[in-house]
Length: 285
Length: 168
Ligand SMILES: Cc1cc2nc3c(=O)[nH]c(=O)nc-3n(C[C@H](O)[C@H](O)[C@H](O)COP(=O)(O)OP(=O)(O)OC[C@H]3O[C@@H](n4cnc5c(N)ncnc54)[C@H](O)[C@@H]3O)c2cc1C
Ligand code: FES
Ligand code: FES
Image (cartoon, rainbow over all chains, first blue to last red):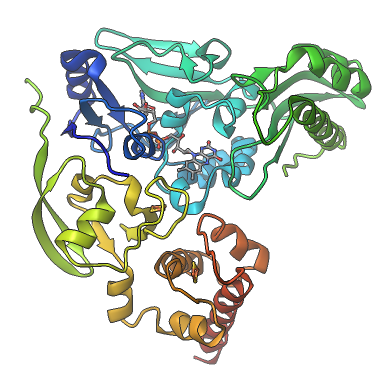
């Protein structure tokens, strides 16, 4: 199908983009990679009257490290996040997750900021941000705010983003030297949205793990930090961790996969990811 | 300074298959429709218009992109290459021959997108495994061939390019 009629602006600065969003209110939306927004336009699932294209706004893309924080610009394409030197060296979890996002042509265009703003519960970046205790940096007409990933994702496609605000960056603390991580995802076909996914980080302590963060995706209306399962894992109780997931996850009803099946898959990938982290490996799937 | 007002149509200029072109584009028109209707490049196939089938894949600034998920006005200033341009330049002659030899197309609807996707893969990976090839074309649907022949064609092209390279 074809998109409905709308007007298009391509601001050359962040202030201009913010002014345009303010001037056109609810009817205006930012356009980042368009890999979700343009699909909804073509399918006529959304009909904003003004698109504010962020692609010509300078300073919104690229990966930099400042002290103990890696800053990823909102307009950095999925692929460029995953192949960035700093990411490969400091945040290998993101490098491992990237190839699971859609397909090459979509990864070339879609952006990490777009994924944050959209907050699709079955996607990789939001869960990785939870696992890595990232902060989402937002700019509004008056101020910049920083929101912890844990507070940012608030429900099905719902975030802390206020109308007129733009995601400008994701800031990720550099993991400690003894940090380990794990990632696994089950999907029907390569590049499909996850049936069940897990992004995890921890620190090694003796033969076990501490500071475990388990961020599941595709298993509720938002990415979920499974705290009780993490506590059980820290106590060395994988079985207990897998049992705890029944209360912590709320898999969606969908015609193709029963919630019980998704919960089972979540337990399977928890077993795999925990195993890899315990081996001390810094492995991904 | 007040930002420029949003427009329903814009004048754009870009490089298309090696030539500088200009035209006016309605904001709501996607790049795939612009290339087909304004420039007659009907090798840009439209299957789904929501990013799923890959038939519309073109190169924008050297990278594979969905023409149905880019607005035509966003091509302003970019370099766009379609299967027509890649064919004329001779750059994918070997790949096309391999598709032919291996029966990697039947109806041909998916073929332009497959070729463009393969161009990007082969520019990045000298010796892609069959797994890697499958991964690269995972976003390109073919309803005819069953994919094996397509993987064969891309794989033999990579191999042939390697031996040619080694011989030179
Ligand atoms: C076939 C297909 C398969 C896919 N599979 C996956 C997958 O497996 N995993 C996955 O993660 N994604 C997948 N995607 C989605 C893709 O990754 C999108 O790129 C991503 O969800 C949105 O990013 P975008 O930059 O394209 O945003 P856009 O589509 O441009 O925007 C999405 C929404 O976010 C808003 N927005 C965008 N950027 C900002 C910003 N900086 N500040 C404020 N608001 C903003 C827009 O207004 C819009 O409402 C798939 C897409 C397709 C077409
Ligand atoms: S027409 Fe663009 S992906 Fe199907
Ligand atoms: S050859 Fe017919 S769709 Fe691929």
